[in-house]
Image (cartoon, rainbow, N blue to C red; front, side):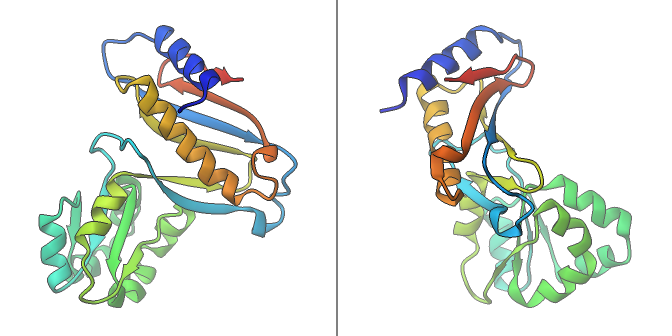
Length: 212
């Protein structure tokens, strides 16, 4: 059962932001009593939502062999073969553009050294370095998992922003996504929920609504 106060905040958010287009729903989580000067207190993780976002979560796969063929038929937004990757190595502008276009990256493990040289300085700072996939391991299920995931990062500032739904989703679905994100974040915090100062939700164009 979802939290009553959370449902109340979601209902208020929906009422205050009627639009002619489908807006995203975002969450902002402000933290307290956490020393981010200590690298051990920072984290990055992927959270698989119980109610996935629409299929605009874009997964890029850099692959070779059977993984290349499988990725092409498994719904990856883009598949890059070794030959194309070598071309990207010679074009920093293209590499930078690629790092912005996709949410998650997967790669055949033998290609990781080449990826590090060609894309590493662009993907690394964005927290998007590819997840290496062992040779002959099925890549299709990983693509599916990432298509229903969001990335959570806590870096220099004690606030976490994430997209957790769309305004046309039911209130319960949005609430369950919120709770899933909160549970995952709390598991990474030294004091759990006691490190959370405040929580806000909002649509793209709407005002921020505090979850009491």
